[in-house]
Structures are given as C-alpha cells and as structure tokens.
Picture 1 (cartoon, rainbow, N blue to C red):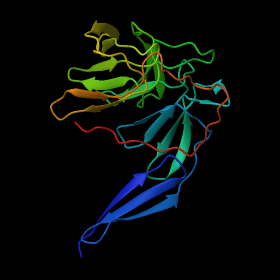
Picture 2: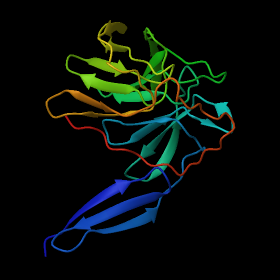
Picture 3: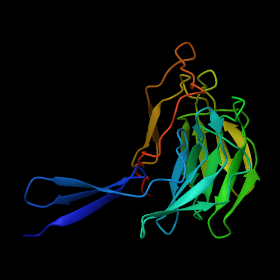
Picture 4: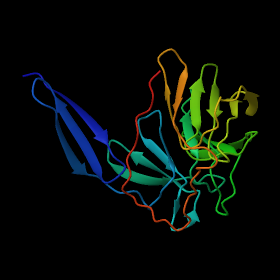
Length: 228
C-alpha cells in the first residue's frame, strides 16, 4: 500500500504526523521542546534553511525584543540576536532574499509603533529600516509583492483603512489606495492571481484591547507560509 506522510511541527511542545493513502487520515502528536520563554502576540517566520524564527511578544505585562530559532532537524531552540525594539502584536513577512521584515506592533508602554526592522539570518543581525506612514499593530495585511516590495494595509489603531508599500531596495514606504472599509484583527489570503482577499475584522467602535496582564504560554503553533 502506497502511503505518504506529512509532518507538521508545532512550536507548542508537539509534532503532528499525518499519514494518508487509501485508508482514512491518521494523525498523531509527539512532544517537542518548548521555547525558552512563554510568549504571546509574537511573530513566527520560516527561514531559507527551514528553521523557524520567532521574535517579540509579551508575557505577564512585559513586552520584549528577544528572538529565538527553532531547528526543525533537531527539534531544539536557540536564542538569537534580539530586535532593536521590544514589540508585541507585530506582523512579519519573509522577503525574497530570505531576510525577515517585522513591522509595527506595541511597545512596552502600549504605544503603537510605525517602525520596522529586518532580520538577516546570514549575519544574525537586526537592522532598523524606514518607518511606516501610519503606526499599526495586530493582524494587518503584510504581503510580499513582485519587485522586492511588501504591501501592508489596515490594522489596529482605530481600524485603519490605509495601505502602503515598502520598497526593500530603498528602505522606504509609500502610500497607496486605501481599503474600502477600515478594519483591524481581520484575516487575509493571497489569491492565485496575485490579488489579496481581506475578510472580517472589527471597526473602531468594536476594537478590543490587549490586556496587559494576560499570561502567555510556550504552547503555541505555527501557520503555513504562502507558496509562490
């Protein structure tokens, strides 16, 4: 019988293995190593070698800048260089050259950030780049565009309608057409034709706030990275 196996690595202490073939799908979970610290509202991005970078977040009211990398071969975590700015609820996107752009978020005082920085896995360094025109945090659009550009739109800061484009070559942001509706805490998916579908979210009147004393956990999973 011809079977294939898919392995889903969870950043949560577990690894899911799905075996599929002519029989019903079978799923099992295996304990995995926890991160070095509990964290909530952080970013996770795949690196070119398949390892996973996690950065920022907060726990028990403390926002931090530290980062660590999950080695998918060994299942172990390694502390790596911290970001320049402590931030929770930012958004991350992997750039064409394998670097990772981390955008926006909240600092330790609850100030919404417009800053952005780039992690380079070749040098294990973080470098601040140009700041957005509008500060934003939590679940906004961040999509890689052709030509080493990144589109961001919406986000929590009064449920933004605004959109802007980052040019990696110049390190600058430029405004583009706004969305029709301001929204925060929404979802987005890149369609096969290159368009971006945004769905749901909340308006300014319904905007929830992060609770500064909520506890976080090391039991967190990863989402799938969009293919080209």
